[in-house]
Image (cartoon, rainbow, N blue to C red):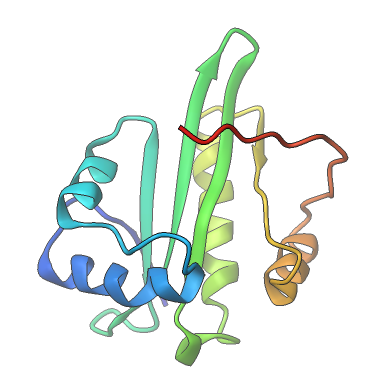
Length: 143
């Protein structure tokens, strides 16, 4: 398996996200090429992609987002998605473990995530990897 940091948005990357994002959510459309390029260029984010083999198709992705505040560096794991045909082959584990490694390397105090309760396999994966459920109020303000 190959996990790599996306450094530029080639056609392969763009097409992979057109295929993967609809498997993650139907609430938003897949990102445009310009949106992906902005994400890759954004200093506070690391976009990862996964292949089952070094020459294979991209079958997964995850984003590490970092923010520096007066209380330290905080990290979030966002938009973990694995192609339906590749699920159960360790892609989600490998992506999540790489995000954990990078968050540590970048000095984060903690790594947080949210996961829809209906995504049972994802929730089990996060718990298996050591994430603990954190009782909090999550608020959202749509802009």
